[in-house]
Length: 137
Image 1 (cartoon, rainbow, N blue to C red):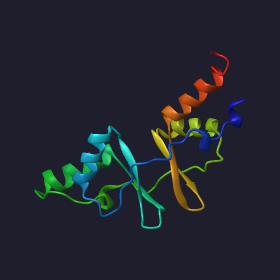
Image 2 (image 1 turned 90 degrees about the vertical axis):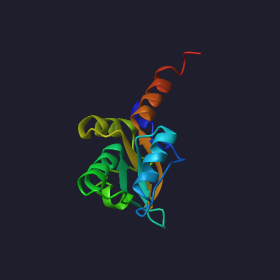
Image 3 (image 1 turned 90 degrees about the horizontal axis):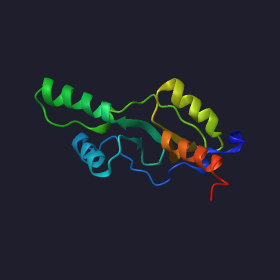
Image 4 (image 1 turned 60 degrees about the vertical axis):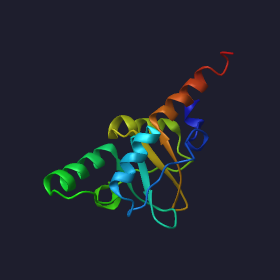
């Protein structure tokens, strides 16, 4: 049963992360080079303080660079600070429901107050595929 499949079994553990003082253009370059559309923002204790998405970057470009005729800004100025999170023990069905109802692409995974991974819609689909095709070989 899919409810017994936990986030920890499918989440990504090796993450691209940013700090609040990361220059916005460095984050944009990282997104481009790694073909990702968002990343967690952590503090020095590996605690989640926000998430930066492509939309946040676009907002930063328009606000700082275009409208104010300044160049730059930092991740901390434009990141989203209200972030949905789950634990590694959360079942993938509950996460799938969050993706559907909250319109998220990825959700950070937190254990004991620390960022330990991230689960994406692709991870959930991979779990479903593994479950359905466990006898396909």
